[in-house]
Every structure is written in structure tokens, then in C-alpha cells.
View 1 (spheres, rainbow, N blue to C red):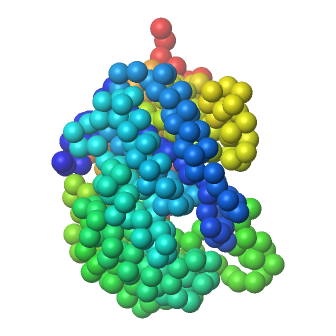
View 2: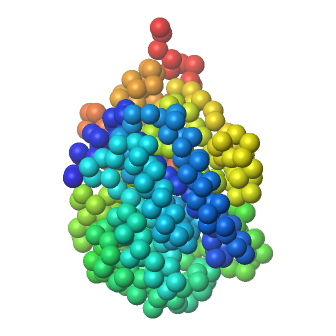
View 3: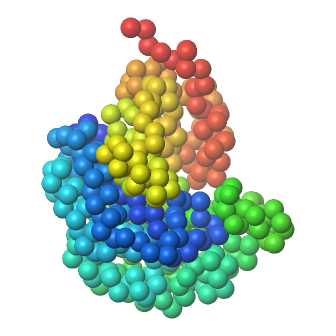
Length: 398
């Protein structure tokens, strides 16, 4: 299935993606600001039943949909018992009709204990594995607080490729010790390993993380932003030359191997989010679940769901989100289609768009606008420049 076909499918009002959050980890990585929690023990049966109940609540609100993808994220969902994964897949594909090409992704850590579950996860119904390798270098893995070695990472990837037709892995670069030579060598190795998808993230110091504390206390200094930009350009050149170009700011794939689930996010389709801290967007509403596992379970017992927030999105908010998400994609966005979808006169400042086209930061084919390679380095700035900022001026007269 091509990217163009997926684009057409993602526009269907009857389609739906499902995100399931497993919040538990063996340890908390110092760069991580995701909703992850370390617990001495986890009652698997309690959590299986809780996730199934939360899922059933979403299904009652969204009857008649076609399910296009399931994504198990975390936390560390490869810590889930395969029986729990299987039960959730069975429930989801009973609540909703599965698409013929249903993509079911699970995020996995590469330590040997979790890799030993890969075959069972495949039998449970997972057909795409995303592995958090993060680096091929033991010193870098130690810096990143990872619990696996480089050798374990290679072994886990080998096991994954024997059990799953589609395998992706993550790497983190622009570490304080990185050079053009070291990152070029790591990326060349990554491109030689036979996967059809890579997620390549520059190290970001997120507020509230242990790395943020370490930086503020001068225990290390992040890489110079200009040098990090050089590494991004190097990444773009090497992946493009290998036939695995970026289709989103940090994601690279061979044609047809893009993450169907994540394309739903970036193309602003509906998705249900279940589990602690999970976000969702459906029926014009933004949904957020309780982050702390214990609070999630308490809410579920009281209300039959784990939500802490369910709020309508105004047309301006929704259009702005669609613009922000869509410009992350290489294909860009159709501003007129977004405006029409949400009943607005416009979602971009046309004069500023044309100025950025003239400066080489945007492309405009008459219908769609997209970032150029130069523009991808300045995504946040460009969004601030082109977004129409006066919602009162946008409403179409009724």
C-alpha cells in the first residue's frame, strides 16, 4: 500500500486508530518525559481488565468504525504478558471492524528478557515491532541510562527480524560526545541492518527530567545547536541516498513502510487513547487519561473509564493542531482543505507563506505547502510565522 493510498484512507470519517498505554518501566531513563512509572510489582490481571474496560468505554462512543491501527506504547509495553496483548487485540477487533491491512505495533526494549517474548508477541497478533535501541555504543547507552548493552541490542534486532515482517528501531543522536564521524558511522550501520523504518531523534533536554537537572547543575553541556543542525542535514543526506528518506521530521522509511498509526496523528485523523496518561482525539474532542496508574484505576472504578479530561476543540484549535501536525510531514498540508474542514476562512497568513517560499524554507505547489530541507531545521519558527493568529477574523459567516 502506498503513502498516497494511506493518505486517502486516513481522510475517511469512519476510520479509527487505537493507542494503548502501558505505563510501567524497569527504570526511568534520564532523558524521558513520557508517562512511565517504576513499580516493584505489577498485577497483570488487574491491568488487563482495567485496559479492557477503558477500551470498552471508547468503543461505546465510537460504533461502526473501521480500525486501521493499534499501537502499544509506554512505558515499556514489551513488559506486558503476551496474553494481555492478545486479549486487547481481540477486544479491539471485536469492537471495531479491522481493516484488511491492520497495523499492530508494539514498542519494545532490547534487553534479553523482553527479547525472549518477541515470538509470543508475534503469535498474539503484533505485526510490527519498534525497538528502542537508542545507540550502538555502550558508553552512549550508559550515558542515556539504558538497561541494555549494544550486544543485547543487536541480538534483539536479529530476533525481531526473524519474528516480524516489519521492524523499526530508534536511535538518539546529537549527544554531547557525538561528532560528524561518529554519527555518520552509526547511521551507516543502522542503514545496513535491513529494516524498512528508522526513528532518529536528536537529544532534547526536557523540563522535569534528570538530564534537565544535570544540565542546570553543569554536569554536562548539550551539543551546540548549530552543530546539531549539521548532524540533521547529514542524516537527511544519508537516509535519502539509501532510499529511506524522511517522511516526517524524525522518521525515515522505504516507500510504503511508513508508520500507518503515526500517519493518523500527523494527518489529523481520529484516534482513541486508553491507559494511564493516554491522549485521544475523536468526535471533535480532546481526551486525556489520568497519568498516575493508581489514579487511573480509581477513576476507572468510579466512572467506568480513566479520563481526567474530555474537552471540545474549537474550530480554530483543531485547525491549528492540524496545521502543526501536518507540516511535520514531508508531504505537507493543504491549508484550504483544513480551513474548509473546520469552517474557517483561512489557517495561514498567505503573504508570510510566500515570503518563506521565496526564502527557500517552504514549497508551495498551488495547493499544498511543505517544508524544504532548510525549513525542517526551523519548524517551530515557521509555524509561528505562518499560522493565522486571529480566530475572530477566520470564522465563516453563517
